[in-house]
Amino acid sequence: MSVAFMNLPALSSVYDRCEAFARLAQDRFFGSLAGKLLLHDSLDTDGLADVAAAGIAGACSLCVDPRAESLREALRAGLCDFVVGPLDEALRILKNELRRGRPVSVGLTAPLDATLAEMIDRGLQPDLISLPPGALCRTFTDRGALALPDHDAPDAETSLLEWTLSTDLARFMPQISRLAAQSLEANRSDTLFRRHWLESAPRHLGRAFVTHQCLRMTPAESAAFVAATRPQFAAIRITRAGTEL
Image (cartoon, rainbow, N blue to C red; front, side):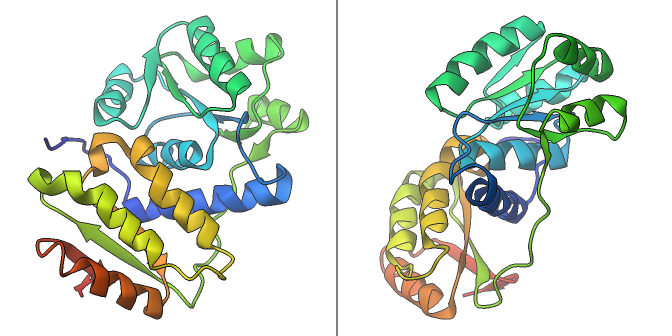
């Protein structure tokens, strides 16, 4: 079933943000974002990409947005796990999953400034933030929160492959992802991340991308993937830079 959602991010944007989160985890959090919290200010297109990427990377997220319909659309698309009203309810959900080190995304329908002020008064501290500049944002950063990382330029040895199937063939996407994982060169430093993306992304991308997947691959990896996939899935569409392979 297709999902109508006007502000979906590009899947490639989610991928690049997730890779930036993975680098941040290696540099600042001993290799893992499990048990870490991202605080975001809205579930617009960029917010959806950030929240989905954070979940794939292992973090929990709290998105504060007064626009109830935007949060409900994200919930329907499968890009947000819960939408709640009271801050206490959001924190109850997050506390359980943070303690277990399991990712979850919570949308909170509430005014941003008042909610941030309440969090500060209660001593609640995120690990990562994407907030408008100002005194409230500075309070979190002064307490140790990190701003979301910028995206580095992609590895010049790789290019982005995207593949899609029709909705009625979506059940085959896990098999295709396994073929993609088997095509990756084991000795590359980014292969662990890429295999994690293939395994974890579908859980956090929800119904919005159920027929669509992407991955950065070297030319040799791309050739191996296409050769392994075409004989089994004639209906698959694989593109690189908009050109079908």
